[in-house]
Image 1 (cartoon, rainbow, N blue to C red):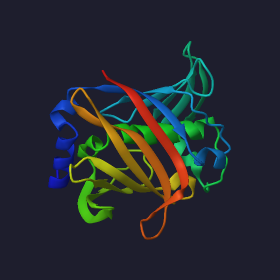
Image 2: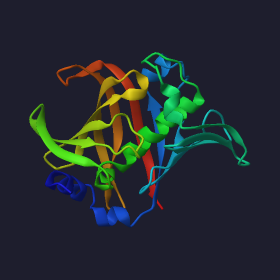
Image 3: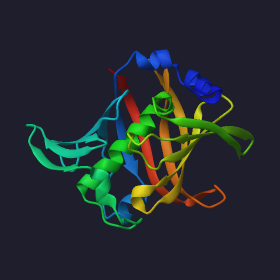
Length: 239
């Protein structure tokens, strides 16, 4: 583990504390312009997200309508009823995004796949970067106002579903995460800058509660007039 990641993990509660838990649940509320581009009706209804911490697995309920949930792994996405009846499912879900651009319509399974990997990444950062298969190096820092944020570039292993193979993470003077940059490959490969703030402490782990995703220009500047996704998280519980 490179020193930058070690310092960031320690600032967020430490790897030992993280490994003491297996699961995490949270209440999520999402908004932003992406959903309209994808012809998805998105409201501020609170939903419950449950994830495994040490393998990429997630669920969201309710999903689509009351009494349904979404179950996600990198190789499978499903919408499941309360009686465990499978309403819809898709194997190898990433392949279904071939030829998509930013405005290509998403069906519920497309949405579920995106929600699954994106929110799993949100809730496990920065600890997931210590998992096997990641390639890491420190990059040029980012200056934001009076602060200088140290940069970490991660190349994700093929076994982890995520936005793009290469992603950048920036940490403030306190080594807490401030920003996460990536390209959204499944939506035309648009560049995004995700700003991260308002952490809370849960069982010794520091978890951000506010995330705002903006389009990013070629100079790495966020286009603040274009809020693509908003995520508000609360009611965290480790299992």
